[in-house]
Length: 338
Ligand code: NAD
Ligand code: ISE
Image 1 (tube, rainbow, N blue to C red):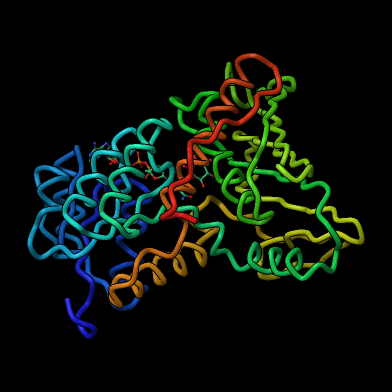
Image 2: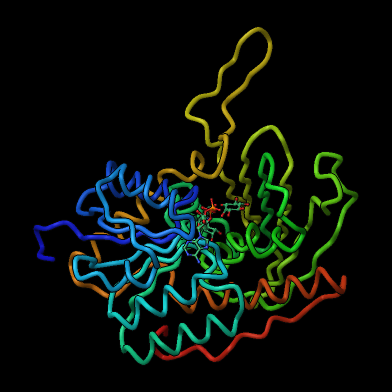
């Protein structure tokens, strides 16, 4: 790879987000080319590879090791992330890993250990909300001090529907994990404790406990509530409002226009996360590609952020199971992530 040649990327996991990231790396962003893919479903891998002229590999490890691969994107299921992230670190290749970094704190800690032993940051975790223009504008308002110290944040994380294998635990580890990272970043502090409340169930979710109300106590004393509703039907709706001492800041509705007609007004609600966060994913991966091309250490959400998010998610699972307030226990933060 030279400064003028594209970064040659291997993508492992060619499902929904894998294919979406392959599309953006191949046709939207500059400076990258997908040259290798792998999926446990070889037919899917072959079909996706053919679409972009990449080589389908029989295993993720072979794709990572390929001599024409400069960097790796991991978009397989969470339980497989550790093996591919660790293999990428062992190969000395930058790796962008979709959330979660891994599905246990122990696995995240092993990734931290491998990266610390390597000596510089190779891993970036796909917490794309940090790149969303609306959330960035919200953070600017908070950081400016205009609304005073934040006291409360209200969040809504609404999916139109979820697949049959989705559980109430998924609502925390797969869905609310985005708010976990978001509020750590927005407030610049850790989450100290978690509670989970279980309202009456929506008829749209069958037996699933849906919605959940997740409460985070920030280390500085602010409280965050997150409504996770995953069968809301009307669209993919992400809400956020921070109440400060002297004012509030809220996410605006995300549609480009509001139509007023015939005594009512309306606007578009995004269909899914791909539509709502399209700019965030584009910015996130373009910055990652540019950093890799420049030979810089990863600069986005780190292995530490992935590990801390998993520790909070674990506390959330314990809070869900016990209906108690659960204090978050973080592992020691290595100096590499200071
Ligand atoms: P998906 O089921 O659509 O796709 C996952 C793909 O990975 C499938 O094709 C599957 O066959 C493949 N796979 C599973 N295990 C594998 C393994 N060990 N090796 C190689 N391939 C394997 O799922 P998805 O919705 O694309 O989600 C994939 C990952 O991306 C998950 O970790 C998910 O949490 C994350 N995700 C993030 C966002 C976001 O907003 N940042 C959105 C969706 C998904
Ligand atoms: C999915 O995996 C995502 O990460 C989406 O951003 C989130 O909204 C959804 O609930 C998850 O299932």
